[in-house]
Image (cartoon, rainbow, N blue to C red; front, side):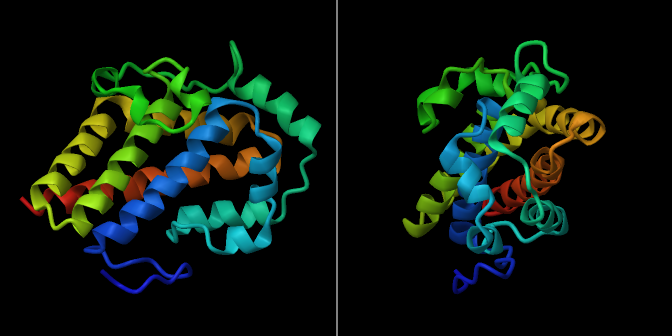
Length: 208
């Protein structure tokens, strides 16, 4: 495991570090999709010190963070636009049939707001992948290669059975319809997350 440096991309083989980073980002992104942004989440997304140490360091994620640094969206504008984008009948599709997610227990998801969503919601799939990444990190620390491979396979199954395609549709819709700077950043953050998730799953599965 490489030494932790929040400003650098961890080594590909650093399962523990990468899993922890993915779990953190999954928590943030799933909350952004699940319900209007809470005061605490808005503060975190506006905090330059926290943005400087965003866990993922790929080009898409860093571009999204750059947009967040310059965002001047008001709480009301974000709440109103969230409803327009993600509320009932919203402009951004966030559901996709996902057999893999439907078979997994949502009690692995920490956020109550995400747990109450249908299993087909993009936020649920992201949160479950984040939970699997966190478990892979724990398995690495316990030297359980079989456990790491199992979590990698679970993430791959979720990606393949709907999450990756649903994320792409969501990204495109946000890019064409979002007005607030915060929501312009979101598709970049999602793209970076899903790309890193795929790479991480492949690395976990390679340990078989």
